[in-house]
Length: 393
Image (cartoon, rainbow, N blue to C red; front, side):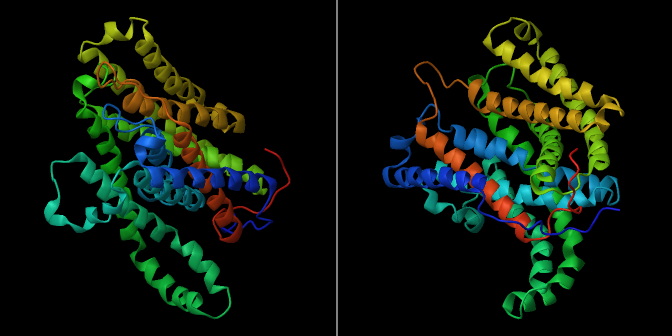
């Protein structure tokens, strides 16, 4: 039986942590420049390209990579009656950090960031036909839900601490939270289903500006299905790296079962993708061997290869196969989203986009901050399961 979740402990300010802090420090300077000088002076954005990597990676791709909590909760609480429970906390932590920092990235990307608070408050000004309104409301609500789902880990730690406000609140709040957590989890399953599909709906508005191999009425469905695959893959990726970094026992058998769940997800995505291209009469475009058709086939291969790797029960028991397949799946999802939001998007002649140095550094800084927060939380709070082990997988 897997050990109860525990704080892994150990020194915080390692060499790797200091490197991440340095990158984050540089990004803070770039952020100061961005907020002092505006978006135009510090980014490659324009009227033709109103979004760049701050949206394509930090938000659209970042939230999909942060769907590990959604994917594992779906398996754990809906289909497998708690079988994957040891994987839930680290997956939810990754999701909470990913979504929270994606929300911060949006504040960097929009011009009038000081008005973001109005979105959930100014109900009488809502545009009920807007896909972005649904994305904004769902993401805001989901960030709150994720931290509530993760809060038992903090309360368990605080209850063991010295007398004070945190200990008193934890002793009162923990039993109450356990009674309502099932409803919080249900809401946590609904919200990503809504906004991940809506991220696909946003690009339906592009129409002729989006290349025919990516513009599809099935965009909402393909964004939802691919985020599930990315979520499963990130859980395998995160679990493998954390077991090596912190010396905890790896849930190899459980991850093998989880990897098996990726196979039908990948198959469904590939079938939808091909059926869509064929029924819309774009198969000849896919076979034209131009720049966009090559990107299309790269996406297909990145989805297909891990499906083949994990199809065999014997092969997916291998740690190496699990990890390599998860990397390919993550790459497939990133490429599909980047292609849809940036590469295959063309606003017309005369418009070009390439990320500026501040855009790149701010993105790297946000990623560094996410990793730093993850390391801090797992070292101080009971997130990871499994006792320490010196055995290398």
